[in-house]
Amino acid sequence: MRRAAADRYGLHVRTYYRDDRVHITAAAIVVDGCAYPLYRLDEVWKSRRSLAGRRVLVGLGILATAVLVRIAATFVWWLGGLDRAVEHWLSGGPGTVAIVAVVALAAAVVGVLLVEAALSAIEDIRGHGRNLELWASIDGHPVRIFHTNDARRFGQVCRALVRARSGRLG
Figure 1 (cartoon, rainbow, N blue to C red):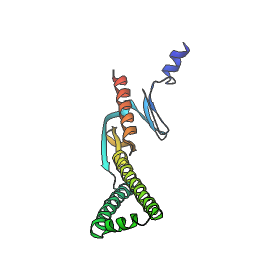
Figure 2 (figure 1 turned 60 degrees about the vertical axis):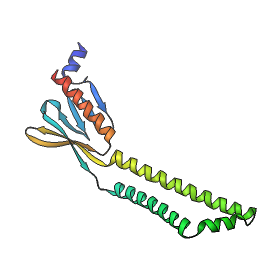
Figure 3 (figure 1 turned 180 degrees about the vertical axis):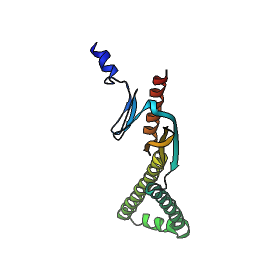
Figure 4 (figure 1 turned 90 degrees about the vertical axis):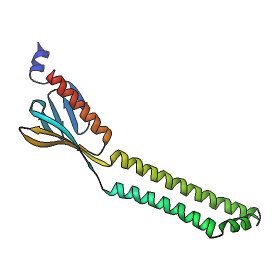
């Protein structure tokens, strides 16, 4: 008897998704404290817009820097005669060889760090490079219900909303 009364008043409603900003139940979607009852959602659609923000520019800057460093290193090596200088240094004794080895190792570490930063920037652009929006028609008016640039989270919210709406209709 108590459970039937609780269900009638909406106290025990199935949850399809919940995080710090979004809570989707069989009755409503609540985003940042704003509730949208599912029965009022006439139509739901997704929108994606590209973000030309700071992350994209930083990622492209890092990639451009990595390419320029590679081109400059090739230019200095072949056209600057660095190969002959290295041969001269290597014939200078164990101390000179150790210094050349440390400098080469430092250059390799910097190169690896630049490549890692560039790959990380590319992954960040790929994962967070779009502004993803969830819209609904409520009483004939389009309303943006939810937006994020996290593709994984957006997919979870969309799937949960589809399950909640199909459960309500079925």
